[in-house]
Amino acid sequence: MAVLQTVGMSTVGCKLYVGNATKASATAIAEVFNISGPSLSQTAVDTTHHNSTSRFRTYVPGFSDAGEVTADIRYIPTTATHDNTVLTGLFGLIGATDVSNWHVEWNDHGTASTSSVHFEGILTSFTPSADLDSSLDASLTIKASGVPTLTQGANA
Image 1 (tube, helix red, strand yellow):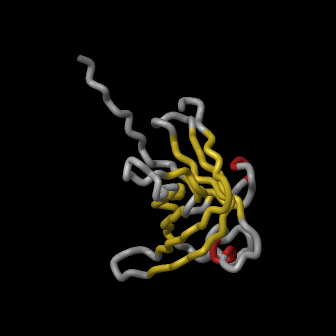
Image 2 (spheres, rainbow, N blue to C red):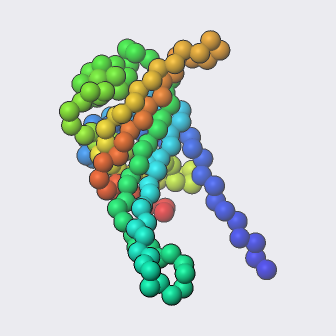
């Protein structure tokens, strides 16, 4: 019997972009070392009623939510993607009055191909931290708005 093996993917080279609806003209955020999300979810609407004969609850799909993307960066306040420049710097995106375009990019199985997810979102949290035994870092949270779009790479 053949043994089914998984093909794990390295996270080296994953990127977070901001600023344009197309990834090719968006700006890669510098010094990203952790990316999580988007955390997709869907509500379950309870349709159970008193005449349900199985005595098991029944559900139908409700609204979906693209959730959040979180990331950690090595924070450099003078770097263009970290500074207070409106619409492109993370510090400047706090308090923005419009949603921004974001992209999370993953490498596909160590090849030149990449897959990515595009979404509109609002930077809801930007938290610098200066731990004694670490570099100056920052954590950020982006709340996704609307439907995210997955683009599969050539080897997907």
